[in-house]
Image 1 (spheres, rainbow, N blue to C red):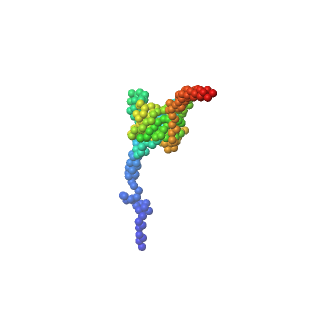
Image 2 (image 1 turned 90 degrees about the vertical axis):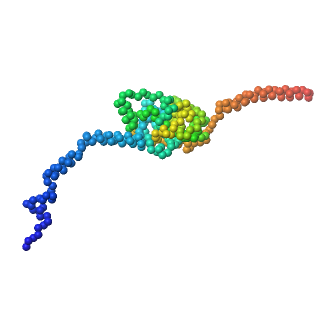
Image 3 (image 1 turned 180 degrees about the horizontal axis):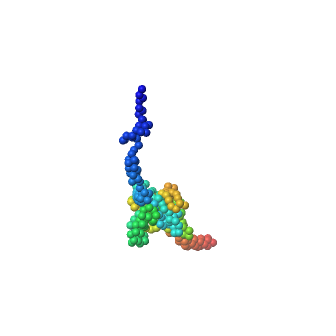
Length: 310
């Protein structure tokens, strides 16, 4: 009786030659595949420059359209943002998306391009003529490791279009639409008077903002830029974004306060002008002489009447 040959006889039979297309691949096929795998693999040092370029491009795109890191170059926003002489300047993350869909609100800390009236009032440093230095500075500004353009400012929104702002009431508070603002963020430098500079009422034009620094006595803001008044206001179109987070130095990590000073505003306590304050004294002095004169006349008349009766 002839037993059937198993289907896997070729594998079990060491003497059976391996048919083309079955079993293990040929040496030539194996070596070819191995060579192709080697040709696709790049060296790490060849890929590193590509990764760096891609990372820089993504960083620049993100900072141009989503969020950007800024270095604060001045002390006008102390102590909310550090920028004072001798201290480490804060680097802040500025949200560039939110204000594309809404206008800045009172209390927002914003970065903006200085309007023409502001730039004319600023002393700008001379830029280097060296193309390499200029290129490195621009790159550093893009990724937040160099100061921004000298025409970029950081201030807090105090009043919005249509509102009337002035300073100050009897308690040294800024007034918006007749109400004194609640400003816990105001900073007073040591050795300086805790008194804000007075300014006349200003109605903020349409499409503009009234901005001031938190370091109230050391901030060149809407009160002083241009010729003051409505020329010191900032076009909303000039706003770059809203400061959200302090990212450097690590010791100051945290959010940037956007406390709305108008939310808990109180009726302003207006003091009378100087001439009105002195008016009672003037009236008293002016009335004293006629009263004295009339008093003497009445007294003399009474004496005469008394003599006649005798």
